[in-house]
Length: 112
Length: 181
Image (cartoon, rainbow over all chains, first blue to last red; front, side, top):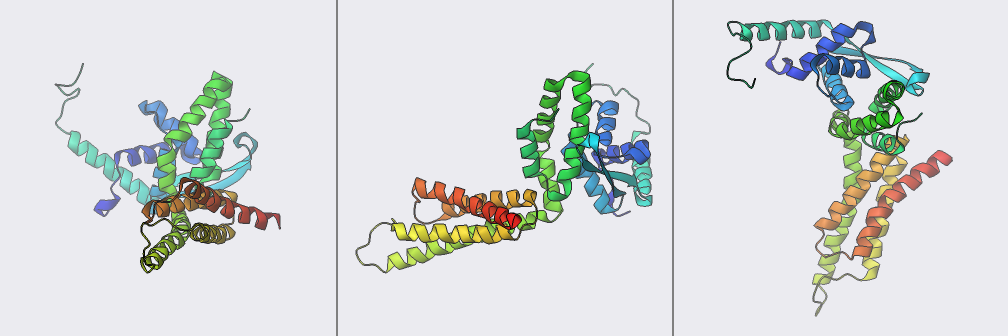
């Protein structure tokens, strides 16, 4: 994979959230998944910005669904991880594991 | 139960036409869930905060989708005639003997105003959706403000205000007129 296509930290979280949610992966669910698992107050703008960037890179594929009443009659844009996206997630996991190897957590010197 | 009108308006203004529908849909869905669990007031506050904090991300998305090119064109289309006319009037004035200062005759200001409105109206006539028409109107106002700021002669406040309001208004008026027809 070219260097420019390595996943950033938030991109990695978004890809993992989409993988976890499966067929139910769309902006609101991705936002909730990241917020509930990491405790971060993520905005819908940041989530969509990342989802669209990953779709442009070919790591995700997007599809539109029909409008529903609970969405105020608006359509939904769902996302799924592509083969390239799976490769990128595996690579990010490998990179992280190799950087963590030999370190003991919690690291000393941090705030208690 | 509906999210706050101001937040929906801001969302419609900043989200690109490709994103506006599903971003608004997602926020609406979560808003209803929050209304049921935490009450309408808390849900409205949450909705407003989401919209305000999403501004940068949604504008970035709009740029990437290529829609920003249209907005930039509208801003330039309004700014260019104002700047060119300003330079033309400067040139004309430089050939008038005993003319000191750059104060323009009212006729010159009026010509600038008409040109800016025509340019903005042409941009408005090219838009296909309300979302984009609002974006183009905003871009026209920004273009007009930038051109006034860059002009050689200090523009009277009344004229400046008129140009900044009339350019986007012409753009929206032509869009509405086309829709009505």
